[in-house]
Length: 81
Image 1 (cartoon, rainbow, N blue to C red):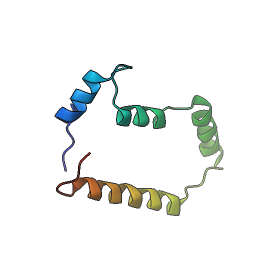
Image 2: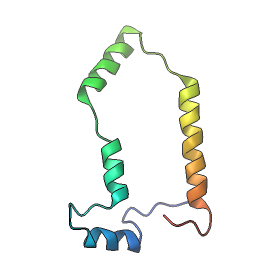
Image 3: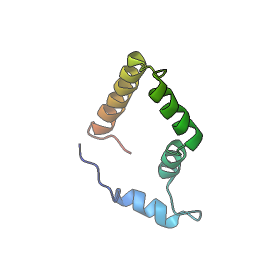
């Protein structure tokens, strides 16, 4: 599956017709999820440096599995994004 960085034609149409910031609902949702919390970054860095940070392999594996499942669904023919 390839990702078109410019988006689909339907995505561009929704951006152009959107009265607010020009972002589609999906772009707005992704932007909300990608907000970095500087305090959390500092805390995680401190925990890594002190040896307190432990990796939860099950949680990471679960999230990777969920992501792979979502990508498979999107990659199926006839799936609308």
